Image: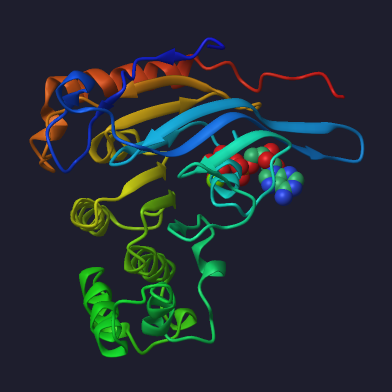
Length: 292
Ligand SMILES: Nc1ncnc2c1ncn2[C@@H]1O[C@H](COP(=O)(O)OP(=O)(O)OP(=O)(O)O)[C@@H](O)[C@H]1O
Ligand SMILES: [Mg+2]
């Protein structure tokens, strides 16, 4: 398995319930399968291989977090998963269909959130845009949901502002609200809490976990914050330096539901934190592939 330390047994392990073995209840359906994917960029003199051979199967109800050094290809990977960037090799399937363009049922919070909001739309209209595919809700229901979500991210007083009239952290919260509004089966989050202060970040964690449970979602999160990764997820993957591979794939078996204070003091939490930090520290710097 290409040296990957894979400790994930097939099981149902969602925030919505206790972890269960396959023998107990069957395996949750596969939402995304990433098979031997490769992504490279052609420079004028050499090829930059960013993703070398990444394999990952994500089942319904999993909250998978990807951590890895800056520049290792996390955003590239998420863009490929979202159908926004073509692969150089391999295959990604969403609910059994190969992804060739952005599929319905999948929402993204982009790392570059400021460029992902429509500057000509007010914040509430940006959130409403996230609900454009929800056919079973009336216009007024959508309006109320958008207002409620903006209130939940602390922006009730800024619903009628334009994104460029609010701070970077506030724009990031609008982008989070827009992705959550879509109630998609799969959420892809690229460092969604990076510009937030500690308290707002903690509030966003609880909001994301609440809606994740409520809408029975599957989530793939990228973060640099190891504590955030362990607190939120049911499974954690560590990526290597470029060219990126999955070096560790481990279930986050800290008891559910999580508590913002107690979970972080749980022995298993501390053990995982230690293991991941050690692994990141040991990761060989910029493994080179010969130019092709
Ligand atoms: N469109 C592109 N054209 C050429 N090279 C690109 C392109 N997009 C990404 N890269 C290269 O891919 C590599 C990985 O970039 P990426 O943004 O995926 O890293 P990352 O892991 O998300 O980093 P960070 O943690 O800093 O956000 C970098 O070397 C970058 O230069
Ligand atoms: Mg990135």
